[in-house]
Image 1 (cartoon, helix red, strand yellow):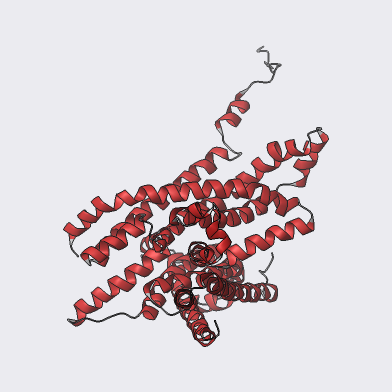
Image 2 (image 1 turned 180 degrees about the vertical axis):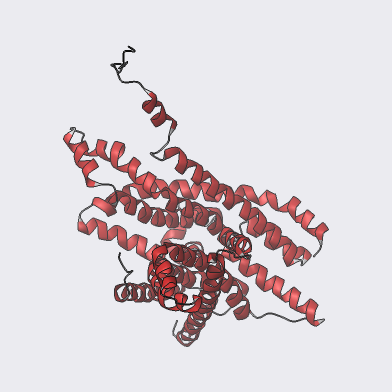
Length: 219
Length: 249
């Protein structure tokens, strides 16, 4: 077990990095999609709905497999020679797709929950659409979305374990290799689960803290 | 994109649907049966009991299902006592390991869902049931649980969808369910797009069906506008209204 401490430390960073990168990208895309879905004349509305429905209705593992293996085939076809999409990139893309699919729905719900009177008041004050978003809808919507958004981050940390299936050396992969080489699967998988549990606990605590700091405005 | 191959996939992959559905339905059933007493203990039990249940749900919901599955499938073999016991016949079988993991997982999620439902049952209703002289078990069975179930149905629908999707993890312990079949077919044909897209479409159909079924159940169980209610509303009062007719002079 001793020799694996350094490997676990590196793998921990890989897992955290994967989650943070795909979480931030997913949030960004989720926000954009939610805003484009919320606009009354959104021509993308049905496209966005189809996207979220598909992403949320298909197993995460399948999306990861599709992007890893399919991505390699696709990139090879374009480049004209064998190009391998590495597991980290594939993981980031797949988890971003998953996260943005769920985040879109969370943000859309939160936008819809902002009272219409607020937007009308902002309009009557003469704020343009940018300022309406920045000062009126945005802050209220983010506070409303916070609890559900936090749950997405917890699921994201758990979903990173699936990327080990396509060979990313994250916590799960190191545990798998260690379990095989030292013939101590119980020890290694218990260690892995405690790492994941600490990650989800940290996420949960920070979300609770943020919720207390930024509670939803009550009417 | 090779459409002939997609057609092949459409013919081969449905043989994995059976195992996917078996895993999902059995785990959901076992999880639900486990979660009902746990949810009551979590919602109304003494603090020590409630926290014990919370510890279980917290650990299960805070770790990836993949880790739990590997812990059970690979990890338990490290304990010699397990290998020597009679349970080894069951525990060395990947199907049972997957079923165990999924059931424990589903139980943890469902416990929290039902607990939230139980806690949001209005206290006035429970007090009314007490005032009518119902015993504690009767209150739980006839009053609290039905209302809590109705409240938690939308969230439980998400759990059903989650379980359908989660059952794809069984492919990592050599089970040939839908994802397992797809992975096997990809390694044979090396056409990841076609096969995985078809598999995804099948999953999408299954999850859509689950969502529709939950929505149907929600509508059926909802308080408003059920046929029974409407029938009740149509019942005439026992005494007919006196028709007041103004005399035409």
